[in-house]
Image (cartoon, rainbow, N blue to C red):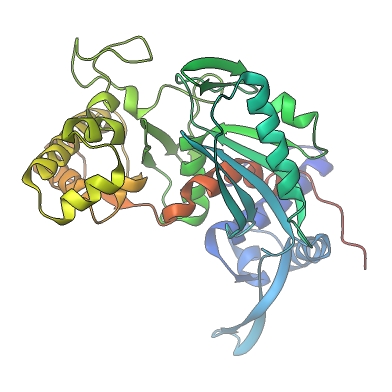
Length: 393
């Protein structure tokens, strides 16, 4: 992400420099101190001072040596540490809760997947969340949980700074989830709509660490979410979430959507829409149809890819992107979605400045959701935040 201008007061300048040093390792991997100093235009003494403090804090450690061709000597490389400070990540999915720990390098540990019990009410939903936070804390062993990150599937499309809308037994409930969890734990809580968090995760740990303009499209079980990164930063609307790619118009006057409009893309191209069109009840059944070469299933998937390409081309006529990343079960190479979408874009490349936009699958695979839940907390609190307490000997 872009280097930011330094403030006028010394404490602010020190915090900004500290963040810039951490960002260098986050986006470029293990580095020696000399390279960091050159990239940031700071003196070697300044970088040595900052990195020494980061090592004492436990955020950074020395990982090996690199040969310096110009000087003919070896220098020590340093990198973010992944085995001490972690974020407890909570991904609220359509039918279950995914919870685990995510380290500064994006590694996931102690992951659990728990189905929502039947008959949940607003109060029992909150208790369900709190119970599993308590259980997860008991699993941390030597890990130091410094924050909690929550990624929520937004229903019916709204996640604010504090509240989420959840569906329990066909009833919608607005819950001040951030405040409720904050009263229960003694670490900061970060709440984010899941797809924008996934885009941050892809920027931090995936294919797009060196790409500053891209769109992540998440093909979830019930809808299509998205996160847009422009100039290396997450693009936000009002609050935490905007409607997203799945609620761009595909068919004027089409099928009615939960958002109150008609003809939204996700009614024609989401996982649930595809299963309905194929008259199937599960993604496993769809996979079996595709493997057997079922023409009907192939046709439905191609129609869905065409719908996505139509909307995406309209979007790309306004926003210059380098890449489109797809996540979710349908982004698997086992399905023709990615290749078909790429083909549609290439056929209509005339509107694009460079002739094409690359489409690829998220590098994070099945970790995308849980790492996406943790990514805003890691970036805003640890990478760009104030310093953490130094580890006592």
